[in-house]
Amino acid sequence: MDIHSEKILILDFGSQYTQLIARRIRENQVYCEIFPCNADFEKIKEFGAKGIILSGGPSSVYDANSPDVDSKVFELNVPILGICYGMQLICKHFGGIVAKADHREYGRSILNINDNKDIFKDVSNDNKLTVWMSHGDRLEKKPDGFEVIGFTENAPVAAMRHIEKPIYAIQFHPEVAHTVNGSKIIKNFIVDVCGCLQVWTPGNFIHAEIERVRERVGDKKVLCALSGGVDSSVVAVLLHQAIGENLTCIFVNNGLLRLNEAEQVIDTFKNHFKINLVYVDAEEKFLEVLKGVSDPETKRKKIGNLFIQVFEEETKKLGDFDFLAQGTLYPDVIESVSFKGPSATIKTHHNVGGLPEDMKFELIEPLRELFKDEVRQVGLQLGLPAEIIGRHPFPGPGLAIRVLGEVTKERLDVLRLADAIFIEEIKKAGLYNEIWQAFTVLLPVRSVGVMGDERTYEHVAALRAVTSLDGMTADWAHIPYEVLAKVSNRIINEVKGINRVTYDISSKPPATIEWE
Ligand code: XMP
Image (cartoon, rainbow, N blue to C red; front, side, top):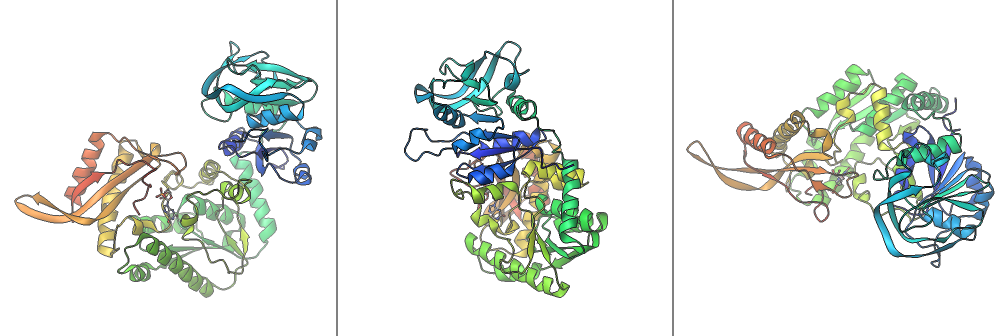
């Protein structure tokens, strides 16, 4: 079975929600890809989608230079769904009128459904639906050949359908969670209207990818840099299932890992999965280059460069490899082709820990079609422990950017113990999975305290826990006082060298998640 033959194409007009559309389609077990809206028509045609979705976007269709869709797309004879800006484009192409709405409509709205067939099948019992709107323009007059299938108080044409062709347009965003049954609307479109079979499942993906890797690699050799994070772990296990002994993983312990992390990685991959794992203990080298360094960006650069150096040295010892495996995910792929241009995200400085650019390998990227949530599902299905799959993100430079100021082994060890207690307690309190990231930071100050009758003068730890959807913005987690009290108590009692614990209550922006 070809899991890619059942597919939808999304043309991106720059909406902040475009990736969400893709995720909703994938959740409904249909493959999809996102192309920039100005993609070449031949490329669009060649892709061979069973349906096309025109995304929303920030522009107004009548602005000079606003992005448009090639009208040949409407002659492809595949079903089309326009969302928000996508709807306005359809309106313009078919001769309707789009104008500025008197009221910008933003937020929840009630959609009145005129016709509960096809895309609106089984989404509401009373033909009313709470939907999420986000638009300034609206349809003043529907184009000829279309019929209105839904309206709201502010938008007389909030949903319409072509009378003869399978072309649909909706003003609201079915992809956001605030639209009730939005995922069902998308499913109705991709499954009922476009006729896609729901074959995009983790099991089918694994099966297909293993075949694809085997075909490409044959009996050549693949090298994989394993960090113990979700992405590289899933890559390693997937490739191991595909090519077994021909995969070698290198795991570099830079001495900046969390408590027992290196042991866990070795135990999981070497002992449990029986993967060819080369363990490199480079702790001393990393501590050496970090001596006397307290500037965060210098730390990142030094760690990044040394990582490349160590990796190259080890690879040379291991002989020749034909392929280098990487855990590139679909959002990285989209960002690099986005019509807005690569977005100014947090990414660039986060690529520290990246691999040498001039190495003469072919890249193999088994996850490049997947979103993070799909990677997690694939990982679980491959038998990776839930602890690895659900682990909070961890920065490449590791604890070096959580020991503020100069990094020493002594301070790293203190931090590791305190951090392990914090994580253990939020897990016990059942909070770990609700939190995007939780960790402890060791501050570069000392504080006076009293223990027994003794005056102490020791380290201060800051606890940081944030909730977030993507790490771009974040709020500090409202952890119950009782949990914080327990953590503070345990850290001060159990970790020699810390006599004061604080909780960070800053949001991002303006603060960042990490302190350095
Ligand atoms: P900030 O601190 O910028 O972090 O709000 C956002 C997310 O990125 C992670 N982060 C990094 N990841 N190398 C990485 O691989 C880095 O240098 C780095 N700095 C921050 C951070 O942990 C959070 O998840």
